[in-house]
Image (tube, rainbow, N blue to C red; front, side, top):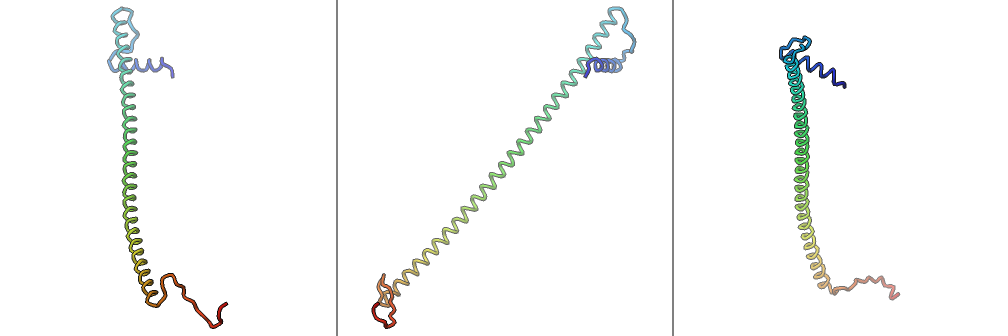
Length: 139
């Protein structure tokens, strides 16, 4: 990109905006000073406009980054809440399973006691084994 065509375009636009006729500069000092001031003012205005454009672009990029970070934080917070809810659900399920196991254990213990009492009533002591004889004698 060449600076001279851009500078010439900016100068021409500034002169048209201010109302200065596009005539060759006069040789006297007042006209030369006026032309320099106009050119300097036009260049300063152009630089200020470009600077403001860049500043607004950077502010827009920062706002986009901030919005993206907030979205990530919301996603992380949501994921944490879901994991915490799942954990509490697992705790509830585990509690129910423990109750079921305790109930089954109590039923088994009651059946063992009943079986032991039936064994004592039939004459078989605890730990005795029933034997069956088919009349063959001792082997």
